[in-house]
Length: 250
Length: 250
DNA sequence: ACAAAAGTGTTTCTAGTACACCCATGC
DNA sequence: GCATGGGTGTACTAGAAACACTTTTGT
Image (cartoon, rainbow over all chains, first blue to last red; front, side, top):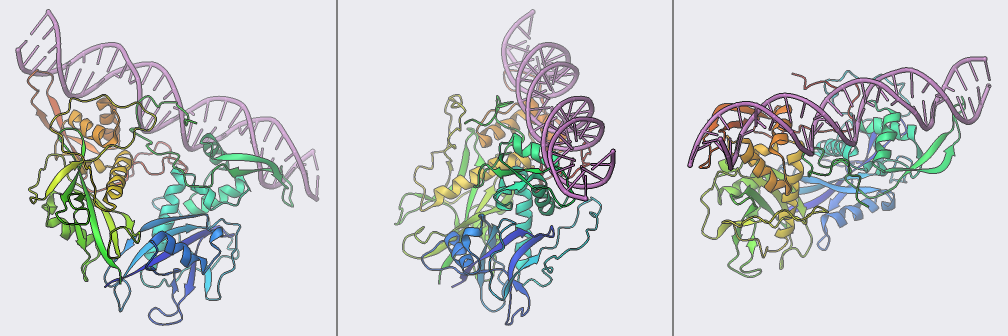
């Protein structure tokens, strides 16, 4: 009776230091001109995870999507006008260095940052070539994008999810910039390196990046040791007794 | 084309110190005799959240369910034989002191504990009147119950979710027993009290509980200050700078 | 008096933060 | 030399775990 669709909020950290989402512009009513998330009807012989990967393959090369996970179900009866359509929403992440070819109606749009809670507004940056904001989101896709952005922000803190937004190899300060964009607050490169190193998420490649035009010490290159999601900081509290200073069991 | 159902894994900590799930025994094939989660078809004019509360009202008094949240979508094409049926699964929690009237085919069944990871098996308890194990779960409901149990366990550590499994008023050691059952590992009453008090989740009622038959100091009664979900320990790491020793802003 | 259960005080540990300082490069 | 960016060493802090000890009851 009711149809089922899958929708993907694919996020990437843009060069300008913004979170961007992959969206396509609707050419027809309803919500003509507004931006919609890629997705489509669930097929008869696929589950939602398979379906979202299939749908994404039509927009971007799926090999470029480093991580996909379910966000939840959006099922308000009137969420799309006309028919009843239930959506399973996904978060997808693409490393910042890949710029996949996308169809003509599709583009990376800047996700508006969440309201800074309590903290004063961050310094105004000299606006470089940033993607245009997601001014008009079709249907309830704005809610889905916000959920995706929040999920990314939360998981960066207690998992190794950084691997999905970072290039294969990177300098610590480049990684810091990605974290700043995704978290929305300043991050110290010094401490970021220490936290990720202590958790054994990062390893040096041995190579170094050449310094910029104004000099400076060449930065060492790092990579994530693991490229699948791992929870690294679960049970911050009330953890099993006797696990005080134990490192991770090998 | 494809139907949509909602399913609720309603959990409770039983008197015997086990996690129990509300289930009903199927009288017909397929999976006759196995235990299934309460739920049913999504109505045309309701979203999944509304629907699951409606479905639960047929099994238990919804006022007794202290917390409900979405777990995810289960959509494998063959998850139920015959037709295509997509399920949105929910976690529900009922305080340990309520024992709602349930239909004849419905009962609380013990959820098998998760495999103890690394830690040695907990002490063998003298088995009291524990609910029978969920030996045969219908369809993919076993997976859903496991997801519910894991979700509860994780959220107990970084939210105030304890309010949903505890009675209105309780002693610290009673609360400790609930946490032990849900977490699956020993918890110190001393430290539990301190952690929850420091986070301002607990407040004394002023009353005390009478000691048991063998004496002992009467225990003070406490309650949760809040009875809606609140994240208390987010961003354990990489939190915004300058928030070092700041308490919660009033 | 003694056992049992509850609760407090105090120490120790660890992860994270802050910050001063040293290193390597371009000009 | 000196400005610039990268990296290390080290002190400080807070939250939590561990454990000894005190308090309040029943027998």
